[in-house]
Amino acid sequence: MSTTLAMLNLDGPDPRAQAAFYGALLGWDVVHAEDEYAMISGEGAPIGFGRVPGWVAPPWPDPEGTKRYHLDLAVDDLDAAIDRARELGASLPDDQPGDRWRVLLDPVGHPFCLCPR
Image (cartoon, rainbow, N blue to C red; front, side, top):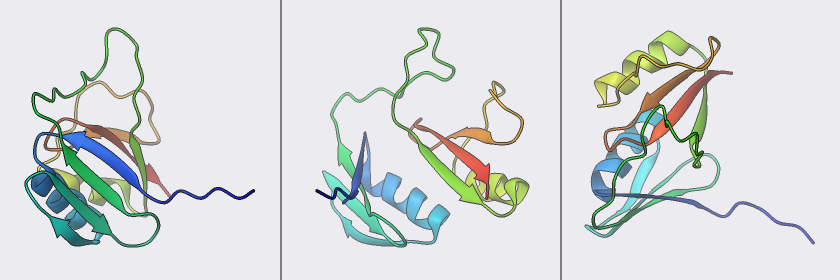
């Protein structure tokens, strides 16, 4: 039996905005955009974004120590990628758990990591 990742879906308050952010960050196309759901596609499995009423961003760092799924994105130039993500609306929190990669928060508060390739 073979299993492959068909798609990744992230919850949030604004699927169109999430798709626009990650589409621009990854250089992928927004292939579907509605108020309730949006999707981007490029190299690898597509990413979908679903609207969840009352959605609240996870805290970073999380004082309870709980872990949710997050994206690790490989980049050639870490500093340039951080600058680009911030231009697109991400924030760079002070709390960083490592020195080789950086945790950022997307415009709706999802943490994601930029990691040197």
